[in-house]
Length: 340
Ligand code: SF4
Image (cartoon, rainbow, N blue to C red; front, side, top):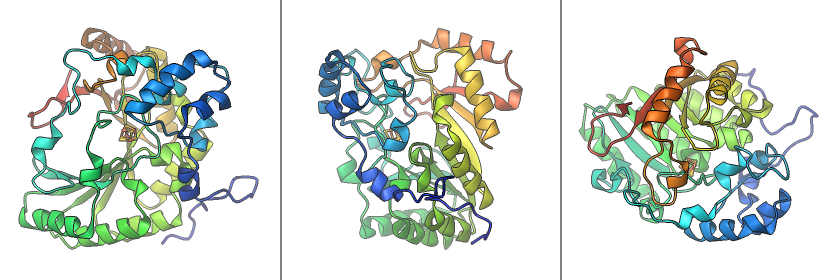
């Protein structure tokens, strides 16, 4: 491991913080506590309770600290606070919008695109985003066991067209470093694999997740490493997130970001431009801007295609080309994301 890695788990004051596991176990999972902590009136609690019954809330303290009190429209709060709108059913909004259940040749492994497969490395997330396209995913059936991993690894070994393994979830970094180190060691032995990609929101919502144990196994793999973060608003990038990104870059990780275009959260040019600038300041390149997948309970976040395209064409006037995310939709059955 490199010696000049910034030490995770210490604030600039020198005070040790709780481990990421402790922070995760202490995340707020009660709508009443969330409303009380942020000074929200009872009018918000009824909707929060109703949405929580469908997809439970989960908000770690490190994320809560970026949300001001008494601000029900705050763009970070809106990502985690359920509204009564989640209980409405809308035509075309379904429980498995990407039809992932049809692409699992082995439990816990999704093979939709050529040359790459997705492994559900952990069923858990460190935050429950209200617009999540996997909010109805049967994670308990995909929770990985060693025997499942062996079946997935056999599948990868047998198909020499696969060049990239993508760890996804849930959030793959919610798994223990012991499990992840073992899995990546196995992937290392598959000679046709070139890249390891990790899709995660954990370094954003609990930046202390990027600790020395994580950096150890990332340093040890022969695979090229790409971490795709998930950040939707510039306010999500505080100094702790910037430091976590720096630690990942120190072990040779390429950092990209994908966002979701969300009504009332980032659906304006100034926010999207500020997000790209702030990402680049943190050493992260914007990658995708997804339109909301039509998942049941998330219709109120949708931005119509015509509006999304107008926003992106206006954004072009504010950013250099390399800071422009690609506006895309995922369409079931297509061999790639679909640019809009
Ligand atoms: S972190 Fe990702 S997978 Fe987890 S709830 Fe949020 S969007 Fe969904």
